[in-house]
Length: 106
Length: 106
DNA sequence: AATACCTATGTAGCGATCTACTTGACAAGA
DNA sequence: TCTTGTCAAGTAGATCGCTACATAGGTATT
Figure 1 (cartoon, protein in one colour):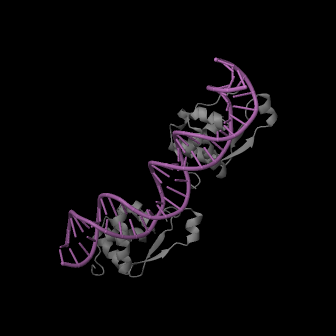
Figure 2: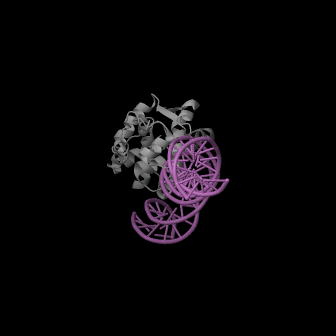
Figure 3: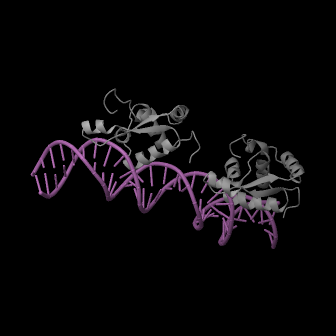
């Protein structure tokens, strides 16, 4: 486990993506271009470190929209300083993930 | 169900064919070259999405012309923006379906 | 009378592709 | 070495397009 506050570039990118509004694995894959085998394990680790929290979407919603259920993530309070540190360490981070639009790519 | 406004190329082609005057399944098959197993289910879906409406031809007419009755389709108001979006997304769409002549192929 | 084709609509079932998430094996890296 | 990243494959349900077939009355041929 990396000491708190020292995120790899990939982990920082994923955390940043969540922070700007990409709230589930598949949309993070699309917005970052990272493969699923990178994103999902990384989400596990970020959650284990307490930087994000997850919640499965209600079954009724997935059923209504006729697709698999999504696991939504949001950043925790602990993520804020880590994010700031990451952004100053990796200045190009923000450029790799455009902010999510209001409705789409939630 | 695809989100409203996002049509596949095939669905857009069929909708376009109706819009330019091919008003029943068989003539759409001929004008687009698509097989019946593609056209008829697609017509169902387009109608379910509210982009087209159907009406069976009067029996008397079919009997008079000595052929099976036709099910006529026309585009709804909801179809207009979808058609415009489809035409800009698939620029070759119009070329694949020549406009129906006044009397024939109705 | 049998056969075949034409118009016209329709369905069953297969394979491909999409959305999402998951995992095992291995390479890269600190 | 221990963590991290990646590839590859898998699962599971959904949609979509297609082939092949079904139906059914009409005409034309044999």
